Image 1: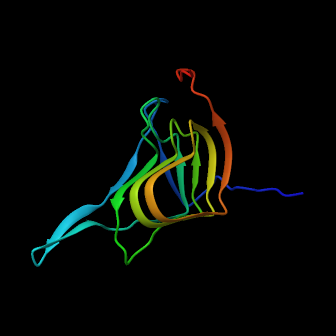
Image 2 (image 1 turned 30 degrees about the vertical axis):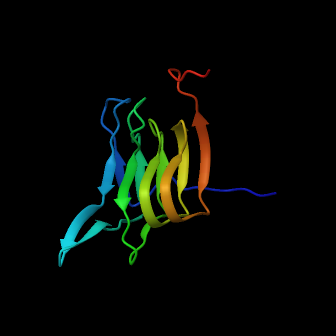
Length: 143
């Protein structure tokens, strides 16, 4: 028998306020820098470990609790490890235009839509994560 156990208590907690459909969004957005008349596009990295995201995202908007955009520094890896995302109002995590990201040993519990959305993501390492309970939004229309 195979099983997975996730701890939802972490060292740092980011919690939404009283409005249960608004939530919050933590955003990392890469920036462009010009060095010696050459443009270096989308630099930066993020390292998160032991962070608990509670009621993040925004209902019916595709806004995630954690969003990372335009981070393409080829010398440093973005890492998200040993963190938990639960009761996400939309996506738990949304990645777009990322180079070299590692998402390892995290817990994703109770999201609407999908837990993680990754678009235009290169060298994407997604291992040993636990995902539990994606629910259908009552406003979602299927054709």
